[in-house]
Each structure stands twice: as C-alpha cells, then as structure tokens.
Length: 227
Image (tube, rainbow, N blue to C red):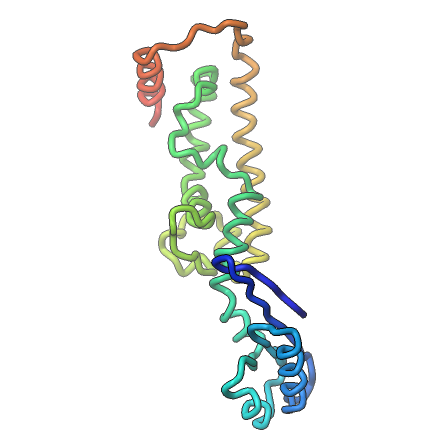
C-alpha cells in the first residue's frame, strides 16, 4: 500500500506491506520492499508481520529506511498521529455537538419560551449530561487538550461518563457508541428547542434593535434562572 501525506507543506510518502503469514518473514521480502521504496523515492517502508521476522530480515533492514513491525507496534507508532489528525476531527465535525456543548446554555433566547416545568426539565437534562459534555470537549481536540486514552474506566475525570463507554478499549468501537449516545442527547436537546421555537412570535419585517442595557438585562435574567 502506498500512502502520501503533506506535513509542513512537504509531501511524505511511505510504502506498507502487510504479511499475514504463518511463518516469520525472510530477508528476501525486505530486499524486495527496499527496491520498491528506492524506485519510487519513498521516505520509508514498513513491513507488518503477524509472526515476526527471521534474523536475516533484521540484518538487512538495519540502517535503512525500512521498519519491521508487529501489528501492535505499527498501531503504537501511528496511534498518536492518527488520534489528532483523524479521530478528533471525526468527533468535532461529524458528531455536531455544539448545540449541547455550549458553555452558556441559558443564554439562548429560545429558553425564554419554555414553561417553568419545561425549563426545570431542561436544567435537569443539562446537569445530567455534564459528564458527557466534559468528555466530548476533551475528545474534539480543540484547545490543545491531551489525548483521551481508553478505556475510560481507568480515568477518574470520566468516572461519571456514560456507562456504555466505560469499558470500550478501541477507538472505532468507542466512536460508534459515542455517536449513538450523542445522537440521543442531541435529539432531546432539539425537542426542547422545538417546543420553545413553536411559541416564538414571528419576526417583524423591521425589528427594533435591542439596546445594550436591554441585552444585558436579558442575559442577567436568564442567568438568574439557571441552577
């Protein structure tokens, strides 16, 4: 497999060869990949083997741009780069969590159109999902946060995160479970917003602009209603 990526405006090319063989890989395979890497001018070549490598393979690969790895070693080598380049972007762009991850949930105008009972229910809903918002905020990579390691059950910061996520140890499975949970929360958030929106008066063709003092008073009024 040939892979290309651009790092700091410089293109990096690597060749990957995966061997699901029942025996250790001989040096002839390393020689072959070195020829391919040299012919196309790749920066590096990687051979990933299920059963490891013969001693001659290691000798041939030494002091070259060919890396001999097990599947676990290969994942560890690229895990950090993949996490920040792919996984965090997937969380940020695909989960669309901004609606319920806002730092100021009581400020949006539509909350004024909820009944007292609905507003109380919305506050309870918001508080209940605080651990999820903390987790998603750490996962999206914004602000230079540290990588979130799995499983979550070993990390005290996420002890109150949804139980369905606690014991998952692979990011692919974790994302799929997170996607389901976030979808349910977003749907409930939308339900409250729809209730409020249905009661909002139609916008005037020439609405009067709110003065600074009125805007401030509106914000303070919503803050006072927050728990």
